Length: 320
Image (cartoon, rainbow, N blue to C red; front, top):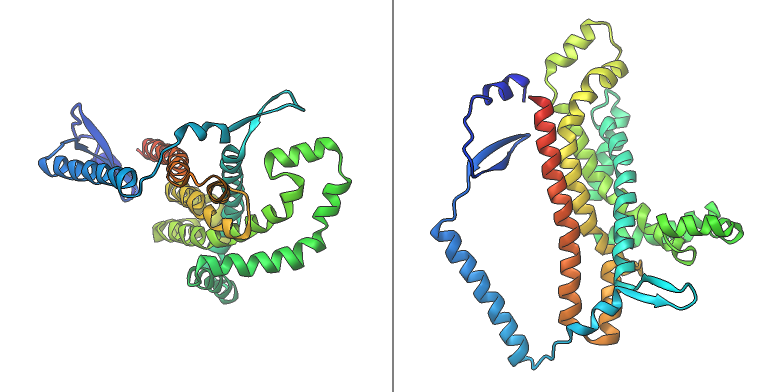
């Protein structure tokens, strides 16, 4: 949408008690109203939740033990003489690390492949199109196993990661543990990171392609008339405009990466879902653990959702 569109919306009077709504790449406002249908649906959801709790307590004769959950977040390390993350918090931090690094690498892959998708070169377009179609039309679990066993068994030994960690200093090991994973788990973590990056990169490729193709044809023609080469057109004219349109869906893709990271639990990556399954099998605190895990995922994803909403509002203000 053009700047003229945003200026044409500037005269709209916004009354108190309104809220933002996403509409394409824009932000409109609408009155907040709690209707009878909303009340009925809320009552229905509360009734369903109450019935579920009743069935768990009475039908399954389940004994709740919420008091056992806090100990799995933090534990006291006598050797270090301080509190350290326990199994659930370690899994939570691993999920964050995996999601952040996977998003960074997926963005790099998606940007390159997105540029390939709009290239004048038929060969590049075929590479980008083949990558997207193969990744998006295979089940994620199949991709995880294929790349995990190929990368983990064939590629990583050639890179010498284990030898590097084994001969590195204590400071290097500490840095690796903070930003990636503990040295014994690093190979598996890198395998999962590469796999998740390739999977998410296919979706980011389409975001980049759509953002570039959404730029008006006149922008290409005007920059060509100024004597810009294809690369100069893309660098100085098209990409700066496309980035404003790409950022909100790209931020939304980060939320998807957080949720998709649970898939790598099948290859024994000690992220949040894997830790929950391990804990459940040893404690039998089925409902307490999975409700806790649900809450932890919601805290992470809802925080990102609020950040994305703020980003959209910021991008809208810059466009006006």
